[in-house]
Length: 430
Image (cartoon, rainbow, N blue to C red; front, top):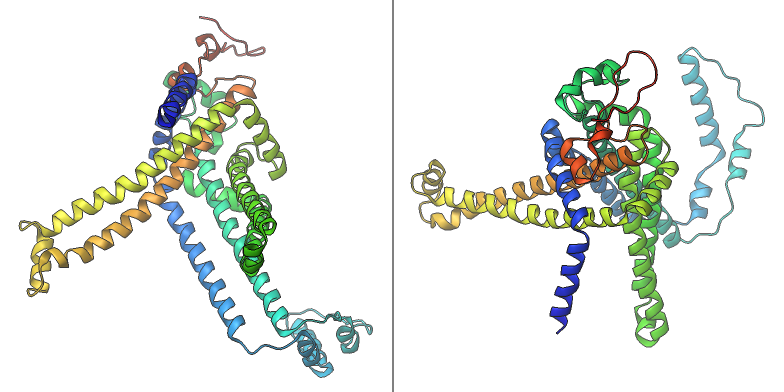
């Protein structure tokens, strides 16, 4: 009974959202062309992930050092700062500056006694000091992790914006409009054969502050979640004896999880606006909320399709690659089978082949996840470009392809413009 009711509801939803599904299908098809125009995007998340793994490794080693080091209180740290060391440090600083050709006379008020006295009087135990330092390192790791992720999202979004608005080969509704588009476009000097590297340089040069602000919000939310998980573990006994405490803790964890997912969803769209309009992060978030309010169903369908595609790609690519590799390794006619057999004649080649097959599985899984991440962001950015082209721009379909124009039911009369040399541009009806 329940299954039948769910099936009826599902069928009704599919019928009601058939138009949005058709639009999403066209966007996904165009997203494939975007990836083909800049194939380096497929491997780009692997480089970002490499930096993130190195960052997390350094943070883990730092935390291990903090937790294994001999603990001392904050007061002991403060007492070790003696006057002589500070005076020697100030003298060394002055000598180094003079060696560089600078001479700075330090004011008399800047002396060791004032520096030591300026240190705050705080009562912290050794455990509290270690926890404070560990929290600082953890928050810095979270911020840096999301900062690198934001750079990756902005770079991929920049490639999509270039494909849709700027590239002379792809930013026109038809090939016949290419010459006119380049003659009048302000993007004529932005053409490049390396869109990925170009947009990465643009992001590093113009949008680092915006990426830092967006990643800071995510780092704060993630830190609060970690702190709540710590409190959750420390109050296990109270939760077992008090139902109210257990319900309150569960509600807080659920709310924070939903809030984190919402922030990540909004940030993924906001970074597209940052690249597309060169605006601040807050303005881009406001634009994202406006987009969600106007096209709620379309974005929901996009998210569902992205989720299904991610599952299909993550499962099918590694599984297919692994099966083909294993069959190749155990095939008698294959060179790899001969090498495996000669390397260890006492062991069955079917077992020995599992070792390189496992390596193939890991590599194919990494590549599949990298492609999935890129494809999701490409679909997101392309959706923003299309909807922005319809809702905001004065010439709503100047860049829209014919198949997308048909999917969004844009009349043909809005795709042609008067090409007069003088006077304002006006629509030309067929």
